[in-house]
Image (cartoon, rainbow, N blue to C red; front, side, top):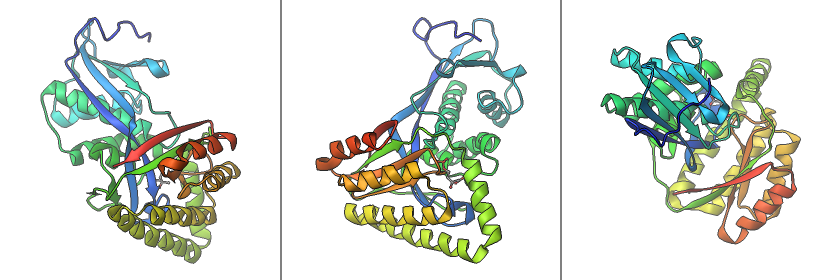
Length: 319
Ligand code: PMV
C-alpha cells in the first residue's frame, strides 16, 4: 500500500520511540542460561506515530521499507500487524480506526534490534493513544511475543534491553537487572554488510553442543566468567579491562564457530588501530562487530574498519 498522507498535515494522537541495541558480551551462551550484557544504542531509533485513519481502518505503514498493512486482513505472523493485535488483545479493545506510521533509522537484519525496536515504539505509541501506561517489564513481554515470530525461541535479551532503555544484565528466565556504568564507554559498531540470520548460527551452536556437550558447556562457562568480570569493569569504569574482556569473549565465540573471515578482519583492524578491544556482537558469521575506543583513537579505528571492509561504522556512547 502506498504511503498516502504525510505526517505533517494531521496531528498525531500519540507517538512512541525505542532505541536500537547491541550485545556487549555473552551472546550464544545466554541461550544456555549464562548471563549476557546488552546495551541500548540511542543514536539509532525507531519511532511510531498514531493518527486517526481517514477511512476508519486500522492500518500500519512503514514507508522506509515500502510496506503497509491493514491489520484485520494481514497474515497471522505479519510483523507490522502483530504489535497492534497484541496490544489490543492485552487491553481487551477492538482494533481502533487508527493509522500507525512507523519510521526507523536502525539497519534491518543486522543484530541491532530493529524488529524489537519497531515493535516497542509501536506498542508505546498505541498504549499512549489508548491512555494506558505499562511498565518496561510488561512492554518487554509483549515485544517478546513479536520476536518469537521471527527468531523461533529467542533468549529475550533484545526486547528486554530495548524496553528498559538501559544496560541490562540478562539471564534467561530471570528478572532482568538494569544497571548503570561507572564512566562513559565509546563504542564503534562496524557492519560487515553480510546478512546472517541469527537463527542459523543459533542452530549451528545447538548442533555443536549436541555433538560435543562437554566442550560446548565449558565454552559457555568461559563466556559466563567473562561476562561477570565485564559487569565489574563497567561498574568500575575500567576501559582497558573491558577491552581485554571483549577480546577474550571474541576468542570463545571464534571457538564456538560463529565468527567469519570478515569479522576476524574487522576485529584485528580495530585492535591494530588502537581500540581497547573488539569482538563480534550478536549472532555472528556476518552482522556487526564492536570496538571499544578512546577519544584519541576513534578516528583511526573508524578509518581502519572502513579500510578493512566495513560497510559502515556507527558510533555510540554507553553512559
Ligand atoms: O543477532 P542478535 O543481535 O539478535 O543477537 C542474538 C543473540 C543470541 O544470543 C545469539 C541469540 C539470542 O536469542 O540471545
